[in-house]
Image (tube, rainbow, N blue to C red; front, side):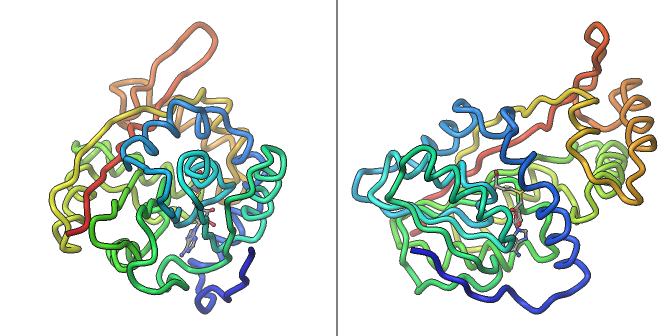
Amino acid sequence: MTTHATPAAATSHAAHITDQFTRQAEIFARSRALHCKAALDLLVDAARPAPADVSLDVACGPGSVALAFAERVAHASGLDATEAMLDQARKAAAKAAIANVSWHRGDAYALPFAATSFDIVSCRFTMHHLEQPARAFAEMVRVCRPGGRVVLCDAMASDDEAKAAAFNAMERHRDPSTVQFRTLGYLRGMFPAAGLPPPDESFFAVPFTLEEMVTRSFPVGDDREQLRATLAAAIDGDALGMDARRDGDAVRFAYQSVVLVAVKG
Ligand SMILES: C[S@@+](CC[C@H](N)C(=O)[O-])C[C@H]1O[C@@H](n2cnc3c(N)ncnc32)[C@H](O)[C@@H]1O
């Protein structure tokens, strides 16, 4: 089943989202670091899926999280604002012959589902693209049933304010649809603010080389040289808080990431 709700009225931020994720869709879908089994299992296991459950992944992108849930639940849904991402998701589902999945075009701020519709509601690597993360999170909580699990996953900014500021400046240049990566404390605090108990937490890192990051990015003004220079300069003192280091000819980084999960009361 596919629905075609119209995402919220276009704003310049929404235009950045559409532009970036239409251009990124194919290369984003191919990233092993983002869609490897270990990273997907960490999130799916944290949600403690049961065979009769129905799940929703908000801002599903190319669908890897929804498809990982589909193997463990009765039915999995994925919702995203960007049609090119949903195209990737449909292709991935067809390739894996997974049929218990639905894709929906829509807006994380106005989920087109009744309250308490899902046993599991997840959202991965998207809060940093949202201008109003608490509003989207409230929607996730609304559509989760009591006793269901709400799962939030994102990369984190360092607790060191200078590193966090440098990281966010680099990311906004690298991908202008980025609003802000938040700290662990901020993400954790979203749970009690939305009426949920304190979340359980699991940590992981998503590794990239400098050249992979430059190749997969569509920076402001297509200025890849500035991006390359900023990343190379970040090795000294780990200026971005990304565990930057030389490894032979390569420069390696990692997005420090967290999965937070709580049961809705
Ligand atoms: C970095 S990608 C993450 C994709 C996927 N969650 C994953 O982890 O592989 C961010 C996704 O958020 C989607 N997105 C951004 N703002 C959205 C909104 N307001 N409503 C729905 N989707 C949105 C984009 O279209 C994009 O597919």
